[in-house]
Image 1 (tube, helix red, strand yellow):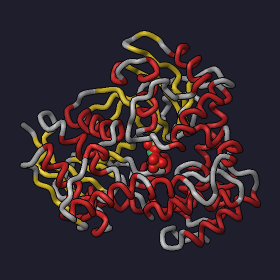
Image 2 (image 1 turned 120 degrees about the horizontal axis):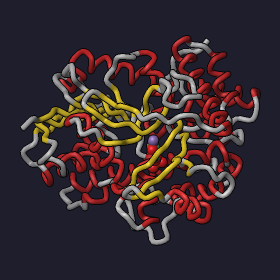
Image 3 (image 1 turned 60 degrees about the horizontal axis):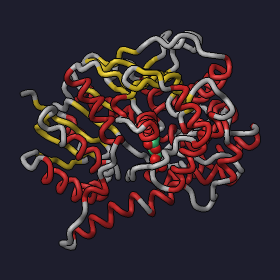
Image 4 (image 1 turned 180 degrees about the vertical axis):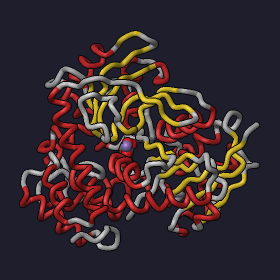
Amino acid sequence: MKTFKLVIAGGGSTYTPGIVKSLLVQKDRFKLNELVLYDNNAERQEAVGVIVRHVVEMFDPELKLTLTTDPEVAMTDADFIFAQMRVGLYAMREQDEKIPLKYGVVGQETCGPGGLAYGLRTIYPMVELIDYCEKYAKPTYWIVNYSNPAAIVAKATFRLRPKARILNICDMPVAIERNMAEILECDRHDLEVDYFGLNHFGWFTKVRLNGEDVTEKLKSYVAEHGYMPQNAKSDVLHSDPSWLHTYANAKNICSAFHDYLPNTYMQYYLLGDEVVKSSDPNHTRANEVMEGREKRIFDAVADYRAGKDVDLTKFFGGVHGEFIVDVAMSLAFDLRKRYLVMVENNGAVENLPSDAMVEIPAYITDRGPEPVRVGEIPTFYKGLIEQQEAVEKLIVDAAVEHSYEKALMAFTLSKTVPSLLVAKKILDDMIVANKAYWPELH
Ligand code: G6P
Ligand code: MN
């Protein structure tokens, strides 16, 4: 049986134990010969590694587990690299969220100015990761990337390293499908969706349950309740109050525009004023995560180190880990499964630019994604996407050209920002906050 060397880049992430669990439960079909945790933060990775060691012991005790900060050790002969880096950690996410809110603008990790700031931090570290893979990994390597902001990462890496074997993915649509399945009282694997958009900026156009069209049924449900199932099963992921608010908010979009079912992230663009009003500028999602998911992990590490028992199941994050493993298995074994992924548009959506990185269904083969044709999309959606796509293009230009003016254009063009003057204030504050991370802008 073929075995694989798999690297998790961003090994110190709070998501690592969940991903490792999802990997190892597949060991009879997708057998690893080595699992590597790779991070530039040795201390954080050692801590998360304490949990991961226990997960390995639980599911595949024979497996070789390596923790390293050395890219050559990590990538040499690697088959798969799961990327989930968070440049600047949650402390910088907090800045991304709080600086815009100071000016009454949406403060979010991947949408609006916060997403642009995070993009400027992440573009070059992702390019560096690709270069390490090109240098050390097997020529058939695949990077499966969760690192955010995935829309900007996808755009930048395609522009700067067009030949890289990187597939950018996001678990949000799958998480929404999980909720759809709970609403319909079915298994999420029995759903098949049609979808178009950019990452964190898209719409489900059709949902089929074992072939039966259930789109209208879902639309009327979501217009009333959002993506909140009546009898929600508990899930460790996306169960905090802010997530419940996000899922519920879809009703305000769905009850107004009847064509499609929105991605939850559309709230930041279409309901920005409501989102700002319900945000606390002194306590944002980054604080919730630091006090919740991140604290739970490091508390558990301390418990292990003190010789206490820990309930590992609270770190097994459901769809997030399952999805990246599903995609990797389809790449590894040419399963041709149909998933939503980010690909170069190349005519798939006829009336969008061909170099846009769109999120659409694709069949995942061992040569990469084979996207489906979407056809033409209506004016409202086209207008929204073109604006957002231009924002993302401009921020990549800003990074490549070191251009302050292009960055200011990106901030000004974002639908979340009311004027050039506000854009400039936010950008100037962000330049100061991101001094250690951004390319210099002139
Ligand atoms: C979803 C998105 C991810 C994002 C995450 C944030 O899963 O697809 O791209 O990073 O939400 O969740 P958090 O719990 O950190 O706010
Ligand atoms: Mn995502």
